[in-house]
Image (cartoon, rainbow, N blue to C red; front, side):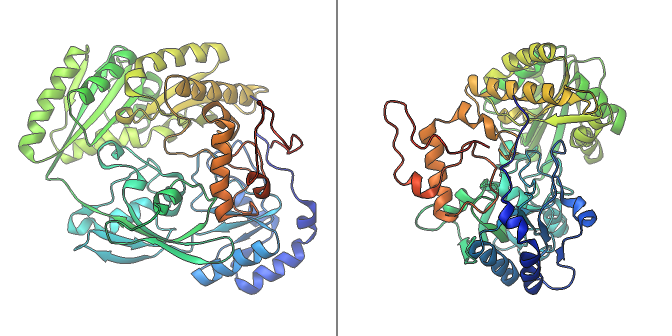
Length: 498
């Protein structure tokens, strides 16, 4: 796998930087436009820190009108735009462009409405994921999707990537918990999709926008569903002698008709890193650790705990502990929530992958991953949403050692190809961004990708929103309208590949 490249910058746009800057300063006055090189360094990368470049200009609007005017100006003047939330994207989804405006939505940070009767909350896109729960927990409610970065990641970014979290197995990802959006199209038009009502007629554009990675529009308001906290929640900490035993236990729990509130798994390197960092009481003499949370009425939870214990013992569980208090349950989760930063303490750099596989393939994939680690000469720590097969292998490397970044990229590509090979997909919740862009052809045919780009063209005919992401081959919208494949030969062979 070669180093990821972005589209060559348009020098004619860069030459107009002073003119573009003046126009944007007229739309967003004061400190809302950042153009000093040193000040823009804070925006040169997202959480995929292996790749960095400065944007042309950074704009921080505060009103929907400003967002609309900025996008209309960019559309009319052929200037690219990269929307950005908190910058926690692990796929490079918010990586800026040298010839593009980076549009930061983090001044949109207000909770606008809390409606307990309709169990919904209206927020601006810069509100953090955890901020929604904080706003309603006093009345016994919470927002279910809870990615590990929930203390920092914005709800707008969650929409862009269709984020999940440890409780997505039972309660769904972002797309299952969003009721409505207000968004601005690249031509400046403001539209609304959905709302507090259950459903709307016509195409499901709300689902289309959720996970669209900033390619179709800029979200300015979000309506989400909130849930009442369950009566009881308890967690089991289960250790296994092999990762394969843990994987089989996961499959058996689901096969028994049990849907836990959350079911997470870590392998030995991740267990030790998390325990050293958080001191959650994780056993060190196991190869795999499973955290299973069961919630609901107390009697139901007690019954299901017994069922899960039986299944775990049948799969050679070596360690089994059940939380006896809310504090102990939260301690179990503290290590898992801190796993990513914990691994950062044992390696100078790491790539966090995001493939998803059928649960039954867990033992096979984990075994194959160890073989791939030997092949590439790098370590890997596994932390993943075991219940829905969403893997997060952390590939450890040192960017200061020549060749290690290339080896890490190649290792990651092999893992993602393996996911597709066993019937899975390239991503579960981190998005494609630039990280998986050049692997899209391993999962989709040329016809599939062209159809996806036709949807892009319907919203953004000039390809100005977040270009260089998701699609490995660039097609002009006019060409897509008449694209034809004859005997396997594609027309327009001169269209560049990023």
